[in-house]
Length: 262
Image (cartoon, rainbow, N blue to C red):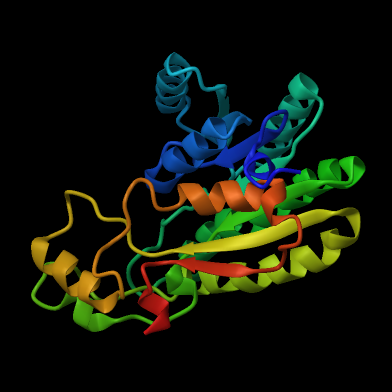
């Protein structure tokens, strides 16, 4: 196969959870631009419909799909509906995340349990369902969207002289760190069926809400001297979703401008 053709996703079906968020939008766009029939899924169906309509106006094959990761039946219905409509599922991108206990360690267990229900239990469940479809097909790619915060600790100096609180919860770091080894575990379980599982660990995504001081301090911590933008995940997502990475599985790839390499 021609190497450029190996990056094509034509004829493939992809599901992106949390498809309207900062990273979800560019992930869905990348998959669709590479030729995949792409489903974007979350609880906010109206936002997804607007996004899908925008993409379709550009000739991209994108559909909105309601998905509540807190509800087991909703997860099952989402996967089943895609398979019923297209007959297959080639790519799953686990991008959705809840941050219901973002700040503070001194919290009741119920706060942590709620977050873990979505960010761990639902992750296991949807990956298993998609994996079953892919094992029947004897092919597929599952891409977990982690975070460089699952690889390193907190760099408190990034937040100096800003209004950001620094009483971080251990939860997000725990969940994203767990995703790193869940990726290896799932790759071990599914590899015999030619189903690959990899994890992308992005760095901080710059938005207009970030204070200039924070952006400067964070950027200086990277090797490329900048935060992530709305295009930085597109290439790696297409690589891992496509046949161009047919011998890559169980990997955890930082896409962080060199933040974790320092």
